[in-house]
Image (tube, rainbow, N blue to C red; front, side, top):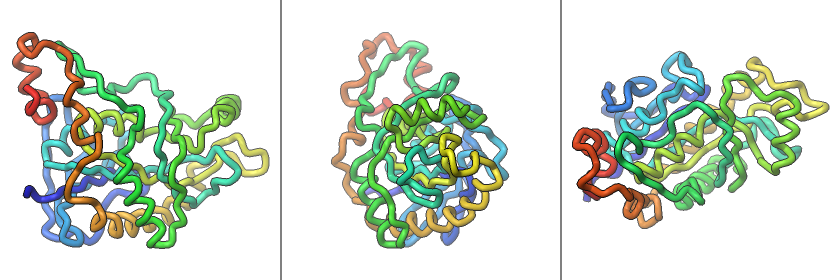
Length: 286
């Protein structure tokens, strides 16, 4: 049986994964350009891990400029079958407080300028993202959060906005009326692309603020976010360490076969270059 490989994409505040053994730094080129940074590959608790800082080391890349396709494609090239995406979010509910940990199971897309599919240029594919995160991985992350005392909330809707600006007050109130739980700028493109790549994906979201809808709390500021992120980053590392040993060896969830019937273009009509470029993703179906 091939060695299990777990990927971690670190968001704001999580720029490295401590405790890795046998560390190697891997720089990759993809048909979609360069990933956010080099991948760090090693073993943690005997599990092979691949770590990538979403914004690059030093937080150099804003949400709208992240090359999500390259990031996920690189994970696929490295044999990753499970991805844990860690992110900072704003709360859209009174009952969700700064410092809380959420394991969302739904997303709403309000981005406007991000490529979020590997398809196009002569090949058409339609995957289902009715349930955009892996239920098995999400359950593992929730259980791990409980074990380390994080008191996580299982389930909830993550509204993904374009950014890099935070919401206007009118937008924040509108989003609240939609019944969403948290707001962020990064995780939905990852979830979509991971599903196309048949990689199981789950999110650990740490609440840093109340956006700007809350009448009594201060409006969101970078200073407050950084302060809470410092605490949440350490929690995230404990959750990841607790989770990886609980991730199943076998994948029998829909994520693992998401592309089985998704590519509808006649195989004979798909350009050879596209077949080559997408070989890590669609090759087994060609």
